[in-house]
Length: 226
Image 1 (cartoon, rainbow, N blue to C red):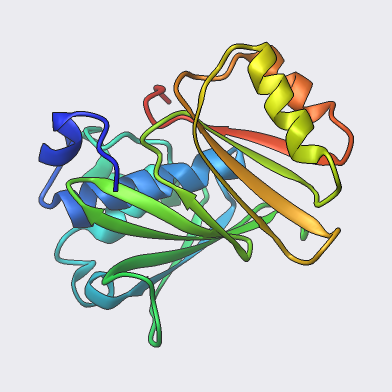
Image 2 (image 1 turned 120 degrees about the vertical axis):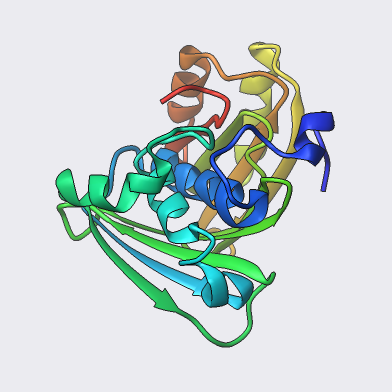
């Protein structure tokens, strides 16, 4: 795990009680919100390991839903997030999962919109001090920490796609701090995750979206306000 600064080690400004079980969970939920692009109509939350054993007492359930409502880790509304979600029509289901999981503090989110095709699945882990890693998005193996501004690009696994992507990034003079890529099969669907040293300009995102073989471009920036 790479730390951006001393506050990444100490933990973020937050509504407690736990940086791992509350702040980290809120950040995972907020990544889900930004990936989905809006508040989901319904969400299924499956907790694993330590999360499954203690999520009610540590407020992990409220933190996850607060993140999906786009609350930051220090938002004073976090303790009331379940009732607030009900007020705005978000249907929430909590489950405790069993079996293999990547970390003791693991959660799987399944988000749904109004239409059948509007759905998203992600798996996130809270690794301490409010720090997180998203390790799976819709079956793609990824590494997304939320520490830096991040771009996710869904595209076909075709020759030259990454070269085109990096050329656009170079043109806009933004440095890539970390890149991960996974694909479903050769020449099939792929997902590239780029952690950047600076937030992406809107026109940079537009240029990436115009590239051949690119289906969708999404920006994650947990430092940005709701």
